Image 1 (cartoon, one colour):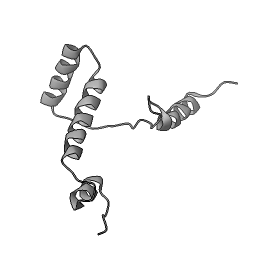
Image 2 (spheres, rainbow, N blue to C red; image 1 turned 30 degrees about the horizontal axis):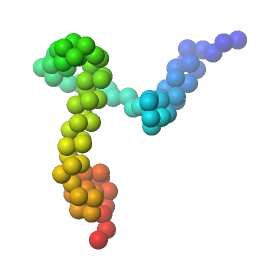
Image 3 (tube, rainbow, N blue to C red; image 1 turned 60 degrees about the horizontal axis):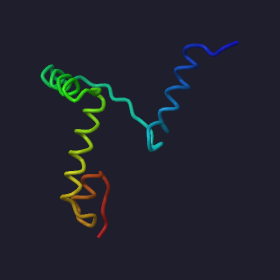
Image 4 (tube, helix red, strand yellow; image 1 turned 90 degrees about the horizontal axis):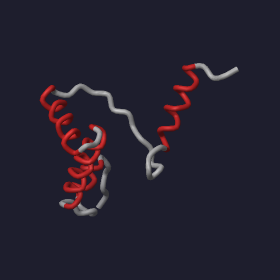
Length: 88
């Protein structure tokens, strides 16, 4: 007998932990955003001929990279950014 819908869904969700190009996994986001933000995301995706997911990922990673460029690894701000305690 084949798997139930519930079993297939559980297997799929478990596989997301190591999915993606790097094997580093994927995370599910579930949130409400303003209509303005959602419509802007839709327009950007259409303009770039890509998915809303791709646009969102690109924007978030670019913002993170900009922040990291301004932080020194040994500075307290580095630990604050990553939510860890940096001992001196």
